[in-house]
Amino acid sequence: MLTPGFTGGLLDRADPLRHDEAALAAAKSDWRARLLKLENFEPELDDRGMLGWTTLADAPDDAELVLLGLDQGRPHFAAYTPGMRAPKGRSARLFGLLDRFAPGEAATYAAARSVLDWHSRHQFCANCGHQTAMFRAGWGRNCPNCQAEHFPRVDPVVIMIAEHDGRALLGRQPSFPPGRYSALAGFLEPGESIEEAVAREIAEEAGVRVRDVRYVASQPWPFPSSLMVACVGMAEDDTITLDTHELEDAIWVPRDVVRAVLAGEPGPFLPPPPYAIAHTLLTAWAAG
Image: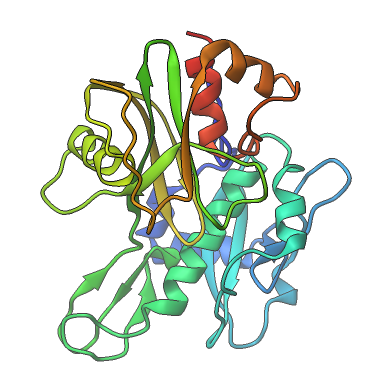
């Protein structure tokens, strides 16, 4: 069974509480309630890869609480404070943490990071420009001026490999660590299906035409808030024509070589990290 990174969350998202002000107030006053520890949007992890939590008493006086969910009835929150902004990129410390999360913990962190970042960037109504206010336990903002309701957005991204004659097409961006190759990726555009976006992105970035696109798995990606949709498409030929604005290089890699590299053996490329769905996608494809 495929288990992509940032999936498998263990909290009950408790949607009924989002619509019940009295129940939400009771959750906030529950002595068992926990507050996620974040420093500059980065989590605290213990030696077991578990997230750090504290009491609501540690929330800043001006904080607004976002209900992340319940664990056996125990409320868990994250705090939004006015003016907080997610840093650009990811720090070396955060990169080091991404491989350490215990199962399910990364999903909780992904939800918290994405929704807090959304609040930080959506303080004003897109309809009339008036300042908005948090509602639905932090899972929405409403406008007191025009009554428009706004909800956290998720940006769909296709991430895919083209297959030809038992080989996978992998690409390399200039920002990658030396030697790393991964699946190609790109945002869906309005008016596109997932299959159409896969075909368009592969053609644009590598000049390869694909058909028979099939879905493999998906993954939330909280930088800032994407849904990665992993697919495989069958290439009509293996001629590569690079878009050098997108890729530095692209190569065809046989299935047995991909298997060996994923197993830790030396090869012509370094694989994506295990928490990335590109690793899940390559693992599934290598297994045939």
